[in-house]
Length: 233
Image (cartoon, rainbow, N blue to C red):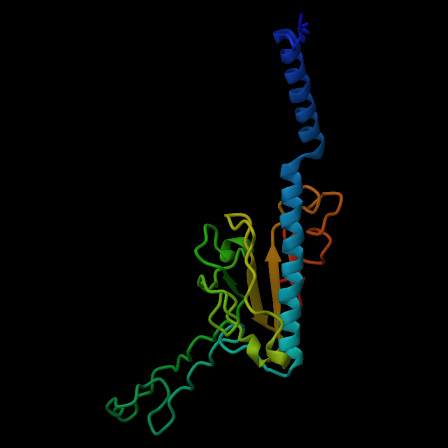
């Protein structure tokens, strides 16, 4: 006669206990590892690398003797006042002055302010003018091209070897606080100084964090990571 062995399975109470222990262990692991912080730090590492690449590309461009960045950091020179027999202050083609009359005072055109001008990838929520608290800014495009039509309107092809970048990087998150910006200004004649900036996302790399790079970069904004030749802009 065949014998049947009755195999005892898990009771409902045992299953509930096991599931509870697994859930507790998973919660503890998530709390200790904190995957959200890991992702934030990963994006910050990318930001730091991107800032270095863009700064190096600009340095190579200027080291190549490409000259000033016309239309980006150096504004167009205003037209000289008309010269000729007409006295200053009188538009060309005006009737001659009566005998003994004095010409009106000559008002030269206002000087063009050489920046700082700021640029950023579009569309955007917060403008770079708000980030830098300046009134002069230029709206950029969605393009990342390095031929002068991208969000950094600089033609890198003029550099030795055609430049270091095939496209301008953009922030991995891109929101009202996290975006890359480029600002430049003419100082000392035709010399242009520039700055790339970004905002760190993680506690580790942000201002006051254990690996703070925002308030220790030599710039004048402790809540931004600034690189370039003009981090005081």
